[in-house]
Every structure is written in structure tokens, then in C-alpha cells.
Image (cartoon, rainbow over all chains, first blue to last red; front, top):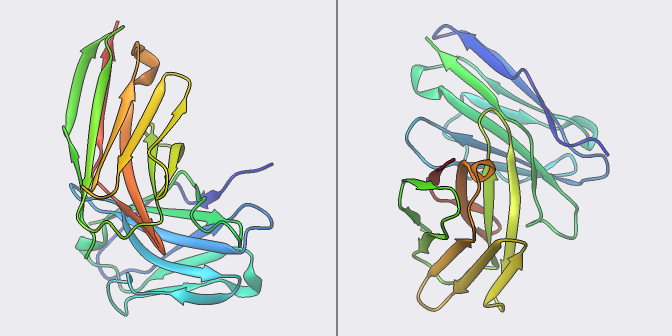
Length: 114
Length: 109
């Protein structure tokens, strides 16, 4: 069974540009989560999808971040326009509907904003 | 607001030593606590999950304990090996995972 995959593995963009990160969860997992780790800080929750619906987006830092999960399969996280403080590693995780705590993590996307 | 603290931030030990990693959390209203391992450039791998009603879990050379009332957990690694070198993360689950900053472990041959 394939694990959680994320693309790209690394992205370097300039301040003001737009970047879209993609996450493909484990097949059949209804729950999908985005987390972020910025330099020197702990991994922080961004938002949670149940199928295509946003269950909790309380961790999204501001309206420059937009997450979608069309059709309840893969998810994208768009940052527009990117700022320097958006640099960090963005993790995606998925879990079965009935065991939301049993999260499987992807390798992360390292975003560098210059 | 839940805060998770891990001590020490970094640890270097010779191969064969037994070691303890510490985790504390501020709000005891948790569903469970997990210990993860992260290798460079890779995702997080769950090592042990302790439900809020449990006191400990064991897997191989790893043993994790949970004292919910005092807001503490420990991860015990027996007979450490160089392959154990990684970052170990503690996370408490309340609707989402709340992570500590991690302990970076280096086991030298």
C-alpha cells in the first residue's frame, strides 16, 4: 500500500510569488491534515479535511493560505503571495475516518521563500 | 492552549546505553499521546501510541509511559544502537496533534 506522498519535495520561490503544494493521502483515508514546521519551532496544525469538507481550519495563519480537496482525494495548499515567514516544512497526514488519531505522515515539502 | 515541551533538545550517547526522553504537556484533557520518529528528509513514523486510559506501551526496545494527571510522558530506549539516531517527537492528540519541538538523538558507535 502506497503511503502519503507530497509534491514537490522542495520549492524555492521569491517573496510575492505563488506556490502550490500537493498531497496525495493513503487511498481510502477520509481524514487529511496539513501541518507546518517553521525553523526552530514545533510542528503546528494548519487544517483538517474530512473528505472534501474543511472540518477545522483554525490553524491557518492568514488568508494568503488556501487549501482545497476536490473530490475528497488529493489536496492542495496554495500560498499567495508568499512571504519570508512562510518558509518551513509543510507536512500532510491522512487517517481512516474512524481513527482520526492514527495519522500517517508524508515526507513533507520544504518551502524556501527568498 | 496545549503546550508540549520535550527535554532534552539534543542528546548524544555511546552505543549500548539506555536512555530516557521526556515530554510534558500543560492540559491533561487529551485523547492519547504518541511518540514519533523523524529521520532527515523523511516523514514522521509513529513509534508508540498510549491511550489516555493507559499507563504505558512497549514495542521491542522502546517503552513509553504516560502520567496524564501530572502531564508527563517518558520514552525509554534500551540498549541504544546507531540506527536509533533520529529526532524523536512527542505529540498529544486533542482533535489534532500538538507536537513538542523534539529531541535530536545521536548514538555513536
